[in-house]
Length: 200
Image (cartoon, rainbow, N blue to C red; front, top):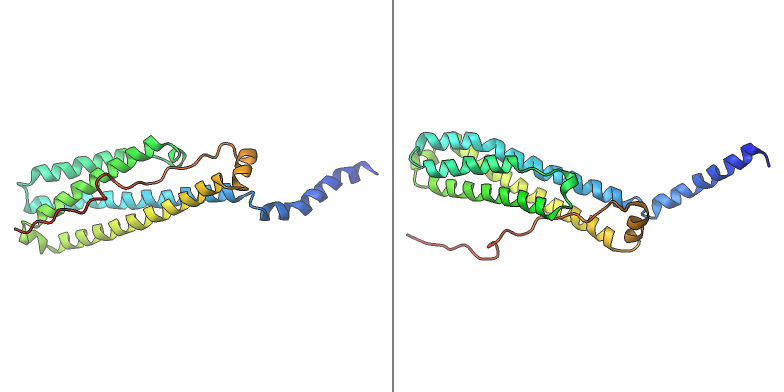
């Protein structure tokens, strides 16, 4: 056998085995990891969209409800904290980082809720076209955030399941030892309790 034939034989065997290896799921882990990271990028994109709407909303409310300075300040401060608390896809395996991000976004959601409740006391503001448009955009963004979070949670579930089940766990230990389970969103404290309803 010539030297060229000895060199080509392993390449030919590898070429024949490549389709079989690609079909056996060896690439599932990196594929699912990238899908989870892409879903995370969409979550961040929607939170950024919400953050971008807040200055206009605060300015509009400020013109009508200047005496609600405490509520407006809380929204501005919560927005600053939420935008300063960022995690990238490489930190999705760190429970503390995910929890900190979720807490900052939850604080902003709470501040926005208090702002929108305060607005109820100002009929002129509630009929202002600019405010109505901003409120509609904010509601749409909150819906997009919910969808993006749901998609991220599902992508993380699929990825984490692949890491924990056979043959994915074998592939992870042999080929992807750096792959770790990702953290997902959890329900905020108190979300299991129905809100108190008071009629005045």
